[in-house]
Length: 181
Image (cartoon, rainbow, N blue to C red; front, side, top):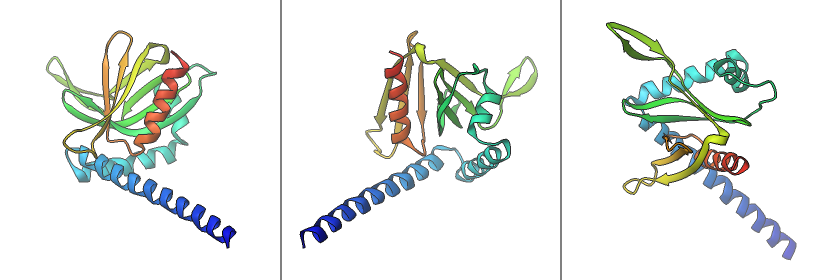
């Protein structure tokens, strides 16, 4: 009887953990879609990004194609998120490698060059030895709104939000900071 109780207790804990993870994913996905100015645009952006990842052979290949990398540099993880900018949130991918944090927008953004409108991907590259702090935070008004503030040694701040895997991103970024502090 004790064995049955132990098995059912372990199974109950596993179901509870799986339920919590599913609820977190659903909440994070909804928050990710709501962060965009257009829900439909965000959903289509995720579909387009998924198609690009499949077509180009995965995040590792996209990372190496998008950023200058050393041959021994390894991509640790990548996270779908938004970068907060003065023009509003920009959807993209945050990459964490053995050498840097690198962010690239999903689509090119317009900017003025004189009288011409030009387009360019929004990119941020922070060498890991330049990281000073990684600060997770939650909105006081809406606990579903979660952010990660990244501060560099020269006091530049970057705010990332709308993560599909917020907890994984926090853990990965904190580990990257600890390894290079």
